[in-house]
Length: 231
Image 1 (cartoon, rainbow, N blue to C red):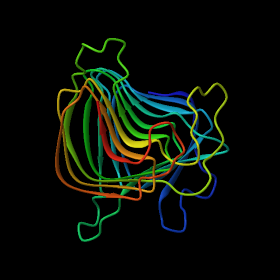
Image 2 (cartoon, rainbow, N blue to C red):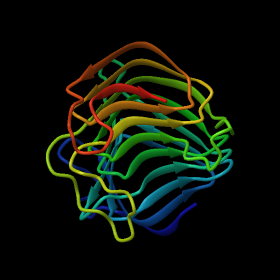
Image 3 (cartoon, rainbow, N blue to C red):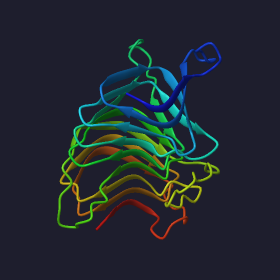
């Protein structure tokens, strides 16, 4: 289930908002079914969560952040499944998931499975990355059953890079969603704010049902100023 250290935070398991506390140093490999509801998860610099083949990770109302430098994010491998939805113990209140300060908030591999709702992506280099295949002619098959009520934004100074990080975040998110060779992604009610770009799509198809794009003009990268940049 895990590689290296998954450690309860030493403040009696509670924070001021009653979230359960976890700290992670290294790589957490999910190869079974794991559900976390209302957790505060603190990652050390360069740490990573990997959802392996046949692994299922469900996050409800959780906050994933870092201490001391950017972390790598959640990588979903072929055959792995990631669910991110609002906290479910109180149906009358919506508690979003949050992924902060990651290189890639979510990095999805071919034939992975995602269901995303009520999640905020804050100060990540890229919020959701699907692609980076070596061949421009090969389509990236992914099962994205839900992608709605997502918020992408950035503000202030980013965490420093982790050792060995090759990407170069420049104090604003490069984009909320990056797609390369993806046949079709359906988005609903998503917000992109205070970044260099909203969505970057290369050889990909999008169906957007309601979206908000605000203040996407930060000149921190070679490509900037686009709600949707498609090639």
